[in-house]
Amino acid sequence: MLPIREIRRRETTPPLGGGQTLRVAVHVICCERRRAFPFPLRIISIYKGGALLKPFKKPAVEEAETDVWQCSSSSCNSWIRANFTFNDEPACPLCGSATTKGTKMLPVIVNQAKELRQTENNWRKSHRNIL
Image (tube, rainbow, N blue to C red; front, side, top):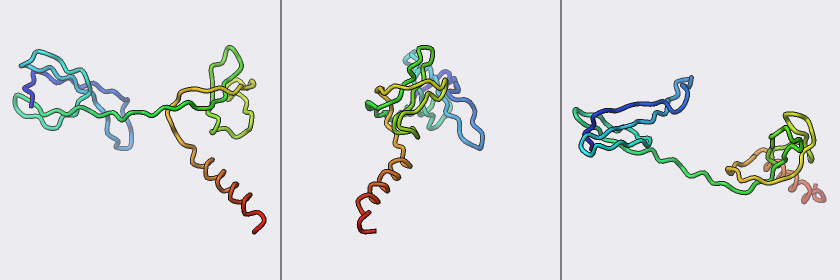
């Protein structure tokens, strides 16, 4: 428990609608040690002359090398993940020019609809003679 002199609250995200809570970063200045804690903290309880604080734990984001389609135009900077496209060679979604295949280090996400379609198509191909 830290005796505190001041707690400053700063909004880190814009207000959300629908009754969702707002994440707030708390800047605490400790009286005893005369130092600031600028990292995001969660206030567990506040009492007269102090507070019980706990730091936010941010989950690590897993990144992997991902295949992407990049716009070939020098004035356009757009790209799209290869597994999120509808065509074999898609056009640029912003300017409409041709795209080239490339790679980027991106957070890992899964396109479940496309994976389900591929497994269903593979199953149909393998069971074509039976059906």
